[in-house]
Image (cartoon, rainbow, N blue to C red; front, side, top):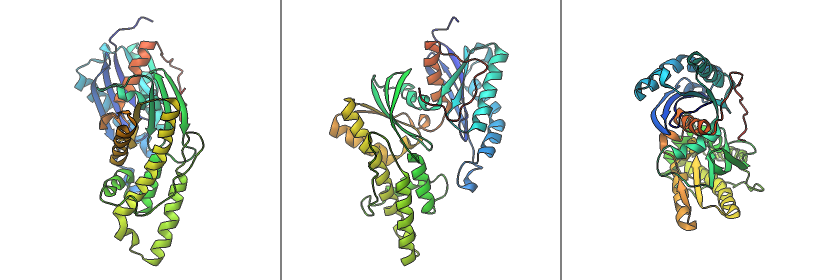
Length: 339
């Protein structure tokens, strides 16, 4: 298959509850459009069936908006990319089937993208771009991974969560505090006003470079139960300090493994990706460690940290260059591994 050295690619992201479409040309993002779903707030979390229905409503307008914003006609596309996984099956099916049909109708090649690989490659959308090799900490609502990145196509997971992801720990503990969904960003905002050392919670000591966050949630739950029995207004009266202490514990768990891996692998180019990369405490702690340990720290712009099609487009660009195309038989995979 002959390929354009400056390919124009339409990318679609539908792994969870955000419908995204982006257009990339020669590695430069021309448009990145996202439609978020508010319907889940009343349920305190993402409802898969409602998410897939909302994707069906949003996908065509979002694709049209991305092409229009980029000033690209669909006939000018060189390929169509979509998120193959991991994610919610119903949501992945909507984006995948749309992309496959769109590519088939236009006679264009198809690119199946791993969502976690795309989070990492979001670092290459804008300057400054890290030099290889990179140690990337990916932290999102559903995943926490430490990945050694040797090239856009060569990545090795050296550590990952054995239970809850860091994003889940933020959201679940925020819910215990009575904060509305999504709780993570609200907990982060309140934490900035509190004392992170006021309430010590256990930092899980996992072997190797793996993570565990379920213990934090359990410790917070029992602590709050005990304290509110003695003082029903305990949470209300101590909310900023509680938020700061919980955030401190989760960040110490992340940083402990990141520091160990960076030292053992001799890596100083440190990247962070995923929705939790927007957390102000995490960013501040990374910058502190950068000064202490001589790291070069890379964090994508906020719009490329949370789920978006821009990162899918960037990953698709590298796959296009490598000739990594998918067939019309490619199926969504909710548990797709980062190979």
